[in-house]
Length: 369
View 1 (cartoon, rainbow, N blue to C red):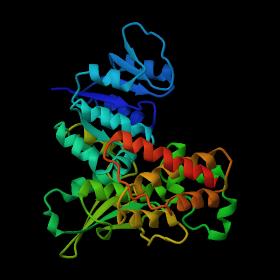
View 2: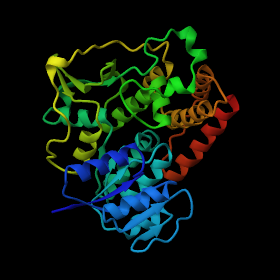
View 3: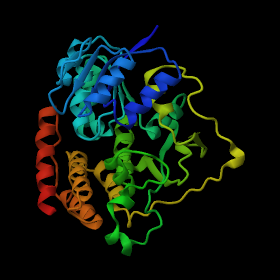
View 4: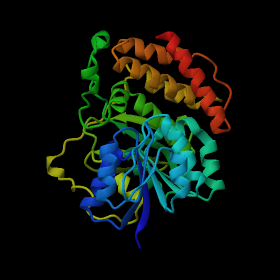
């Protein structure tokens, strides 16, 4: 039986990887809805290729297209669809509303938008439970952890171990950070991604967001989450058990596996098998002084309130300011740190409260830039 899937952010890296897998692996999936922000031509082309009946363009008013139901509101499109699962590949804080709307319709949520969990916090999971929906993480690290914890009793897990490549500045001396260019920050050594997440990977802010996400997903405190730098990006995540053993998921740096595993059960031949005779794997301790945003994640988890939400908001503002050439790399980092110096002790309990706190944090970060 075909699974009915909606792909939000279908022209981005997550969406295109999912569509390529659906196309190449001839999966038992029926795409019933697609969304994009501004690339209407690509959106319509994909809809026709996949025989998808409904599309949504969120960034501008779409044109009419014969044979297609066209929407410019995700709420309108999702409320009309009959679907089993939504793949949320929308980038940034904007993805939170899409997650809420998807869960509100009772759809399962394959979540590539980590900001939804970082900013929505516990109320997003309460919302899913109330609507009898599941949240399935699509990040390669969290997808790997979900596989690894199966069959392990929670009390037997000593810690979760997230791996990170270290980004393009892993070995760059701190006194050279002031001269980092946008082009250098976008040159990720192992993953091909969008601009925002590439800069976040360079600053290790992306790993910081993943630490926060892992805490919410698996219900573990900061003390039970580790980060290790692994430049080859072959080991996606590990768990350490109380008996001292470590279990790992390994694979090529390819998002096909976590995306497809979130959408269907028992996917086959999804990625190229590893050739261990050609592998050389190394691991390093993160440098929290040179990459202070990663250290912030662990302090945020020990705080009450909306510090995680403020961190994400500050990071989005600072990164786009850097990408526009209006601040330096160190100024970007400092603006985020200064934003988090505020207490942020009020925890949001609704989407409306989250929006208000997000606006407040963004305004504060802009004042530092």
